[in-house]
Length: 333
Image (cartoon, rainbow, N blue to C red; front, side, top):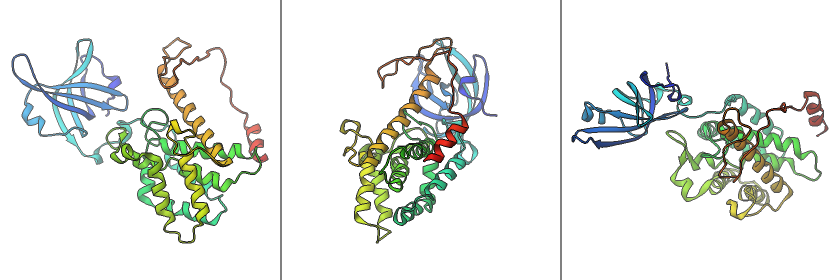
């Protein structure tokens, strides 16, 4: 049975699976060599030490690998660490990724099915066929379902990109009907595509980080490359439609200092930017409050990105829009 790091207490005998985040050799004051490890799972991280059979153990596993560890939890300088007596490398087929990385609380297959159903509402034949090319691309779908939406700011967990994309598409459906003159086919397609470059920008198979492509090019360029590759498979795809679609990807960050090569220049692009920004920030703040509000306090810790604290009322009950009102609002659209 998997034992999570945040469950380990002093003097516990640990027998569980972990991911090796760091691995290095060190020497004691008496000249003996030992191994220093940093072990992680979805709940946190813990230091590990291997004091005996160091040479044999050192060759049996690698950094960024999954391992089966046996050992005892001890306190050292007021911090827990594992004195490891046995460590064995494990293959990916023997582990559950959800044990090691934070994962969306929502059902991935259900979210993807919802996105497919919405995409079928698109009437423009060129956009519908372009979307279909992506839905037929099994290697893309595998990445798209598992990728996080960011490294740390928002939806930073497996399935986060899909969750954020579906949320943005649903926001577009709920808000666009309030205004006249919007091209829903374009807005929905762009909402689905806006962050797809993150399947290449982010690395999430061993830890959440940026790939080399991600650091050098970024998800906006990588996303346009993927869209352009599919468009080239559709020789009758209109040039002006291709240009408009790429403009959404280029401008969805909204401001030059937020990483947008272009600012939004159509109504749909403006709406996409603001809805995307809102969804990302609300999710990020919700996750921050959940993690960073001390028990019994109404105030969060200081959020460096937003440069402020967040107040969490305890006397006011959270309320949701009644189902009847929400249903009527959607029908009015």
